[in-house]
Image 1 (tube, chains in turn green, yellow):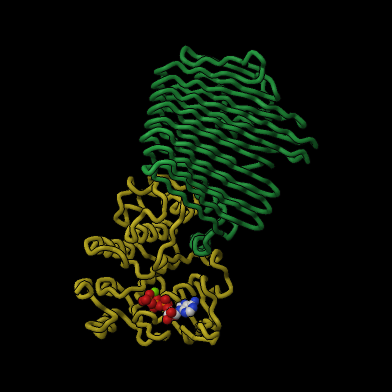
Image 2 (image 1 turned 180 degrees about the vertical axis):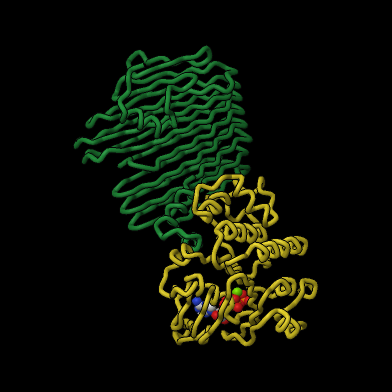
Length: 308
Length: 243
Ligand SMILES: Nc1ncnc2c1ncn2[C@@H]1O[C@H](COP(=O)(O)OP(=O)(O)OP(=O)(O)O)[C@@H](O)[C@H]1O
Ligand SMILES: [Mg+2]
């Protein structure tokens, strides 16, 4: 394991809740290079021959194991695109923690574009957590453009938790998913933007198999002059259930564009979308003030609760 | 001790004209006292409670807490000076957990066991509620009890409960009376105001004040006032109300 700097350790703690080397399989990437890797009897990690990323292979039936693949960038002006492929064996039950932290104190933009593909085999269960975090007060921007593709075989299930709360100047997230019979996908996105930040989040989920289901829910807060766009489309091409919801708090001079959409290609597709954008309710602030908080503290509690 | 002197409050009505809701009201609540305020719907009880908590600002008059003028203080300052207020209609929060409300109310790092204690006091099985969101998935009666629990967690100099019994079922009402009786026992050098129409709550009062049309029309010890209310609209027991 390469010695990490204090900044890198802090970034890893932010994006992967890791304060020490994790148990199980991991792959640490720091400033464009490999900083540490561990494989287990059931989980193999290999660099792609052309060096463009890694392949993670999880054996069928692997239970209660985890893979951590944090990425940190602490040099200014670094721009990288990484392709990671996950092959998740049938009937396994695993947790995958990805995440990217960028610290940019310099004047040039730093950018990490991670392209993740998940091949989830029959009956497998995956919990995927992805956190984005930025820090550093340089003029250079911190940019993250993740693309996630999910291919779900019969009766597999995946729960994705996507979190971006602080410090990323520009992000364009694209998530595509295709589900076969009986597969289920749950997405929970939490997003907060500040300053002049821009965040675009696009989902396209296609339910091909009977009995498949998708639930894509985003909760977000736009502060200062930031801009957010949430664009989620669920396509129902079988007897399936799809639900998408965007619930946002707008503050200051923020802008939020919510474009949930549905496409039914089968009479048995039950699809629902909801979107709500509003400021913090005045009576919520009043209530917390009667409990002794000042207005600012009350707002913070409401936002923290909303995004928790 | 709370003193209200010459308090008036008016709002602009639909036609933009001033409408006075509270008229030059005087009221005193001594330490170690439970005052129950009763009166018809629309008489200004909740408005008075909001004026005490600082949610509304009076057009004239003064409010003093332990001799200090708090009339110009914000809601937060009043809360920090020991005023507690349980809303008639509790506010719902998306994402904030019952535990968070109790933690905020207690103003310290609250232990889960302590938080559970407050919920048990209002007759809620703590385990089922502590990690639930204080959102619309809770019933009106549950929210109402959580509202009371958060105010208990604050340990105030003066606490105002606005119709705490509203939305609480008959069976639980017995329990609620016991909660307030116990609170009354522990009141020591603080004071309590309960706004209520319930005979059973009027019955545990030290003093009763009747508010009608924005004025205190009667105030005195329970034994003085209570008999005059029996059978009037201001004091209905639960059964009478259900009929
Ligand atoms: N902001 C306001 N604007 C206009 N009218 C108001 C406002 N606040 C209160 N009122 C009016 O003042 C009167 C007193 O209202 P308040 O809620 O204090 O009554 P209450 O005694 O608590 O009644 P209830 O027993 O139904 O709870 C009502 O007629 C109400 O419509
Ligand atoms: Mg009222």
